[in-house]
Length: 87
Image 1 (tube, helix red, strand yellow):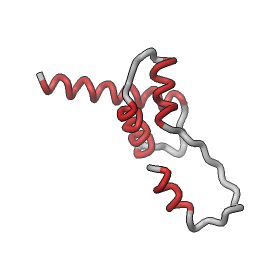
Image 2: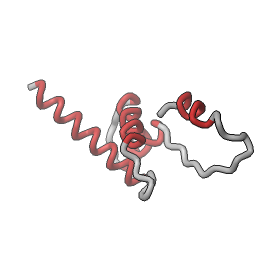
Image 3: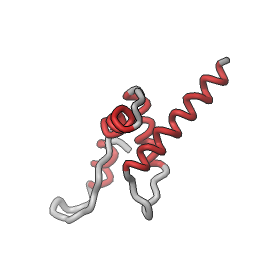
């Protein structure tokens, strides 16, 4: 989901309606990869992680730092699979 898509989704709601909302952005993924996992990923890879997390979101579990870590792990696995196919 993009900011533009979110704004479109929210158009039907009144501006003063209470909501609960947590925002995760690619910079969060870049931070976690760098600081907690001590790996370097690109901004594009971080965006891919965010898109995949949004697409596979589980409302019962929510999104946490563990979700971010699993998303990064999945992205790294896919990166290795692509590299192996090139060989």
